[in-house]
Length: 623
Image (cartoon, rainbow, N blue to C red; front, side, top):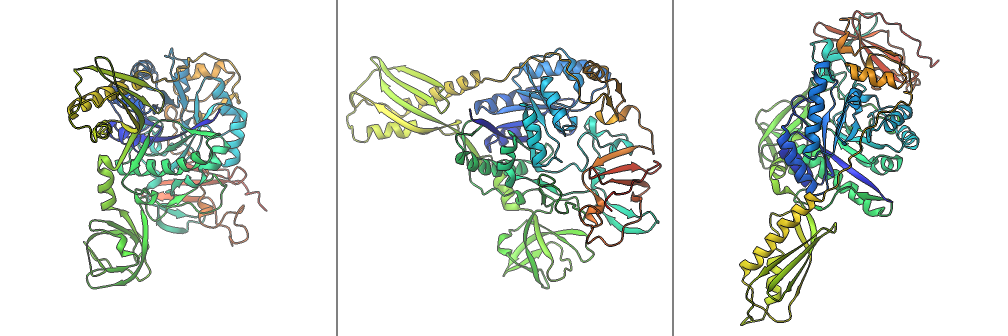
């Protein structure tokens, strides 16, 4: 049996969720009123119900994020919310807190969020055996690790494919709470990683005065879709529940086209996960909406620098180099790509990210709202594409249709229209009315077909129409239109009514967890989570960071990203070119806040500690 491959798009709200479906998403994920890891992207149960109804029309799924850690007083409200979501037709919930598996739940699919430490085959297999339907893998994994996980378990695997990257292992960043009591695991990340920092070496020398040293580029794995599918990924997730509609439609459309090309070339092995065809009046491109430049991260191992040190803001689409600065504007390579109102991004003479807005283009000269001095050769990017944005903000820029065949025929007492959609759903609409012969039969059948094909704003399009009459019966256009409308409205209701969602019932299990001791990074914050792990053989469970934080002395992040590698000082990959070693420990400083960096070369990871922590610096082991 061929495997279904899914594009999973973010939905900040109902409107963006519907737009994502229209743009070709096979599924959308959206936040509920509570317990989602983006507190600024919450939605009412009523809106989620409406989104589910719309998505199910196209056999697309709706997943709801309940991926914060829960405190004791939140367990019962969370359980009640899950039941509400089940009753309105939600397909699955995405969770981090294993306490949810201890609750009395409805038969609803549960997905393990990427915050749940989904980095190795043993852990992922455990989750699958515990009843988890799908696991969202850590972004840091490479193709070999993905393949190993897939071979160890038959649980569905989901992987991020485009969007912003969390520099920390997801679920294990505590910078926000350590410096302001905002917990990322509770949906309130303060994005400390996007701030500018000084870099100071172990001798007190400032190596870098001010740069966004923890800010990294955005993810683009669109070229890796075939490799990831063959490694075992079934769902490709677009990051961005806080992003605008242009970003959502552009990313979804781009990936839809890339994935469809692959599916068409492998029809016996893989298939699309939803119904319908999407038509676009724009050409999608990832560089045309918000991005900080792109990286494939670690999917192909560590092979290039991934920092976005100049700015955490959008870099956008590369236009060309500055050829000349005039008295009133700039002469730029490929200026013809630009439009009035575009935003331009560049590094100014001080090497700092800067920008201007295009007022007008006159005689090949780009006239900005503010003329800033720039050296010839400066690379110019467009990070606000005014015309592209206007195009995508139009709801008709991406239209999704379900193919139907129609058979219009006569009965003894009138006429009947049989409609069958591409998935085999069927409806027959019959109308009793007096039959009379047409005075002029010329073009009669063609005219009926023309009116039947007017599917307009419905979710349907006609693939084939047959009219079968024994004689040339006269029918007013209004009656044909009435019959068509009734048949298609009924067919839409049938599709929604007959939608089949997976309804697995969680059964409490007792198979052993891969480890017996859990430190604070497992984020155990309530009695149900403790009970879950105890039942699976865990003997020692540390409290979540939020419940035991020791100010000034804590490890606040572990990451595969490495400042020494970005500096060209990595003893593992850059030994031949690194020159002298840097004096450690390296310190990041922003205002009065300081962090110490520890480098663990064997697992190729970097740790970030608060300034008062006592670090045991290890030899890099690469001599």
